[in-house]
Image (cartoon, rainbow over all chains, first blue to last red):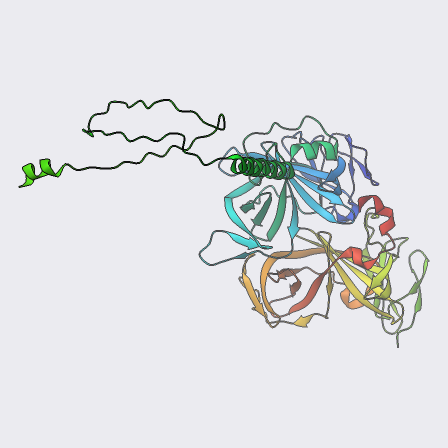
Length: 309
Length: 218
């Protein structure tokens, strides 16, 4: 766990498992879930109150709650983790709530080793009639997936009510490396804008190891190449310069001379027998040679007369 | 005429100098009891206690100072509303020069300033409007982004007496498609509906006195 950029935490001793856990949002946190045993607490009264709920299972998120570090240049503290699945399938993913005292909340999602950081946006992207894509901030986001998500596990503190019975209808639109996600429940309708984050950025930014293995291609994963854009540009320019120089050299050193000329008569055009010319010398040494063959068709009208007249 | 008025907590005896004119509600920082000082100077016990966890990681706390439209202000009060989905806060910005106040709304650590006092609205304005539906108001079209029931209120410091609300009501939050303007529709009963309009505020622009505490998080 990273010790960077820590902020004051409160500790709560779980009344069910007796272990302590930290929380950071004080009167801003709505629900607390003991990461050790899954006991659920409500904090909306302004003080931590136990509920009768306790999650059946706990889970071990890839990133521990309380980890601090930077993602995409901003400092964050992970205050909660949850596991979700697509209803009717066995697709699971993780979601983390990130906190920055100045910039507020952000969310980090992990699926098959692919990471996306998301922030809630206040505006609603515009969908043009008859299109399945959204235009947002000048970019077109194509529909990638539409599904219903179910909350399976949770741990840590949440600035909102954690409701395991509520299912969200999620629509995702991608324009790599960005993603727009719309979550709709019976009571709210929220848009998020996300950006793909490489596992290396997560590893170095949060100083963590043992991240889930990357499988396949992420929804918002851009095309990556081992050649970076600047290097590729330089190679293209170098090739163009070399070809131009060679072309100029050959143009400057070429000579116009007739090395060999002779007329051959082929009586029968269907006769494919090879013709060997006499040998000839090239005055300027080994060079590329432009060979011009000129075909002259001579018709024997006497024979034609016999056929047509 | 707005004048300061001294207030002594009837429960624990702690003394306060009020910023807001009566009628004003005050929560005693020492004991958490809430009282209202009415326009005659009489003290009414609201029979509620508002002890809440101290917020060490919040940019906005009682006593924080800053600048809004180049006008210096001090945070003197807070209304903490809990709804069926989340928690929101209304912070009272008190402007010493003009001896006036304005509410700074926080929801999900996004901040808004509401430009007007709540106005009466058509009771059918948001009727049967699910999240995502479009609502047309005098200020243009908005999308319904949230529908909640306000279930609990707490306060800190001092707040205008008419902002102290201890009864439950329904609230529908609206957003313009470009995200620049917001509206809150409060449904107190089937025929008492109010709407207020607000704009998003970048909290960093307020130059809050507390921001240095979090300089490592910039």
